[in-house]
Length: 359
Image 1 (cartoon, one colour):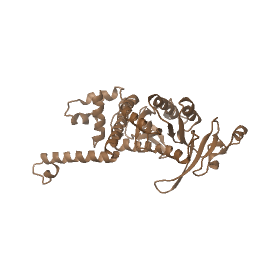
Image 2 (cartoon, one colour):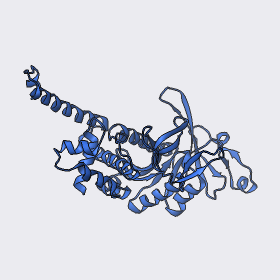
Image 3 (cartoon, helix red, strand yellow):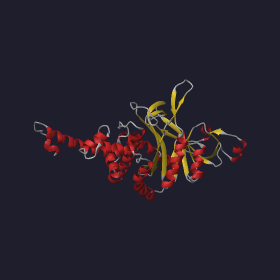
Image 4 (cartoon, helix red, strand yellow):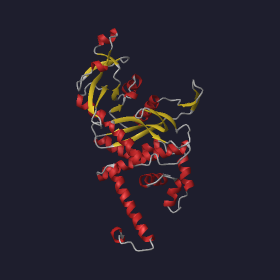
């Protein structure tokens, strides 16, 4: 079974075309049938726990060698516009585009240190319930919210390994999530919050119900101890001004449960969450996340997790070679193209003058 997973995840890193069970079988000269790979994907054994077993050796090395281990949590959507709609491939709101898109939506927990970022858990948004909306249209909805999936995934991560902080964006910065992290898991958090969140600057103001928006309270790069509305314990509040890729100016409001942090430490912890964005980019561009024609929820989910496991392989290679994922992928493609040119030279009816260059 592990041999099949090893084959399939290597195949995801090397294939220049769609990742199909038939294609992999052909690469292996039919020694393993495509049906066997299909049964493997549909068997329900490629899940979040399988991901954890693949990531565990690297995670143990990361935890032992780092003073600050952060779990960054975020979700992504792999668009599948041409796939048949089901409970997994369905319509989700994409906040980066400001519209709904058709695809697979899943959350990832990514353990990050200064050097590495390794996924240790995934949860899929499954819209299994069909309802009729006010306009009489059939819609799908999930029985579990993203915040419920957030807490379930975090609890499993807490059981599996050590981490110091949880970093997440404002989507997950609810009172319930914050208290779950600090009170149930006994961990700290650094989260972005929306500018209209209300807070009090003292216990007296809190008890008197004198609330002010954090946009009014927060000073740039200056820490302020506040009480968020509805919460018993104080947090640190910080206004961060930053440059976007297009050189425009952005503003972010951050809160932290660890009252001992400095402003630079707080920002540094939250910046580790951005490795989750790099992870999303890598699994889409380097691990063939969206390049499978699988058409059942079971095989679609298994393929997605296999793509995440492929990312773990790249992270291990990055540690060994000191090359980033895209440089590693480029090396793989250069070698593959060299073999393709060599095959073309051998198949040709006329000698190729470049044959000696690629021999």
